[in-house]
Image (cartoon, rainbow, N blue to C red):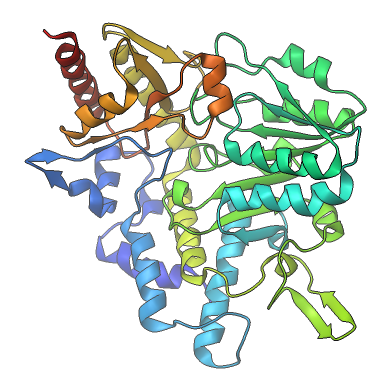
Length: 429
């Protein structure tokens, strides 16, 4: 079954499919997202928390609804028509998502709960079998907790040591320090593609080349990159890539771990149960082939189908167009934000992703967020699951505004004016 059969009717009802658009028009695209028309106390929603989770287009909502209304069934389990349709749509999504990241083999795309589970899968299924005392795991100071904590846990069990690549004052990865830290003892290099705090876009292909020359594998956290810029696992030459649906305009509760076939085939299953088996006997169990040996139990079927619909939608809009537009939007946002009194902006000023973390002198980020919420401006306040990075920045927390292709310059203006009111309020003016 072609997954598009479950999603095209909604797009057709609107009189326009995403693939028909040649130029990114945020005002037209906003119409695809029902929640963006919401108001509160007469004020329109300005949603700037996309790095935490993105909003969902009608085509994704329709895919979820269609599954539950018309062919709800378990997958890979039965011969009846509903199960065949569900299995077809489920596996079609795998093919769509493999193409979305440039993976030549759909079987190397494993469905997980989220990017965090994917990274945990690698740390446990690969790390526990391949790491030993004296080995080193090299990660960066800008990593999300999901690419730190699993490696710390595995290091405790195996005796391996976790080391950290520092960042520069500008908020970029210190590549000279990386060269010095890479040694024959380095077995793993874990790196975030786009920092969820700094907006830094790391030179992944260069890092992968250096890591492979040292004999290490590369584990890439693509949660913040896959929804916003073209990602091709072959061109990046990484060994594993993890990303989440809910950050790429799809449903919550599902993600993808891509890995090199030879590594996946060598790895033992992370979870045991149904589907991941070939044969079970009292004497023992033989495991299913990839990807199924890593997909124990009933999966998030509707969510997988919805994730496939989200990937199709993004392909229709165009990842290059999205990156180009969002790059322009963040440049405008930085210019406007720098006009505010007492603001400190973190991360590079150029060649960065469309998010910005900042602090305002004398105002706690939680207070900033609360003030903005009164104007129905949604941002994030806290350490953003990067406490190591925030320690480096000498800040317990920051405020973060993160943008998507459906955000506009007018919304940036609303953000800045709302922040200006917050500064005036807390300064007593």
